[in-house]
Image (cartoon, rainbow, N blue to C red; front, side):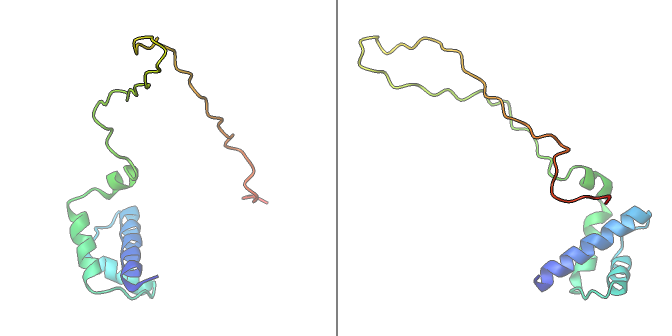
Length: 117
């Protein structure tokens, strides 16, 4: 892992620890956690993280990870079939589309390990 990525990850974990403990996320507290974990971080990371989380609710960020805004109401794409030379005037009958059902795997499927045994 590169130095910047390691520093960034260490500060992320430190900020999560502080949030989980109900403590304010400050540069000094991030530095103290990373030093206690014996992880060397580049000097600007703790201050940067402290400024980012100063005006953000880390709980909301955690809950919204991976959430993206829904696209504006986009209608379904309609593809036109090429008109065959059958003298039908290029008109196509409305055909109902078949919906494909995807098989869902059961959640309890064995992944090759046992958590409790």
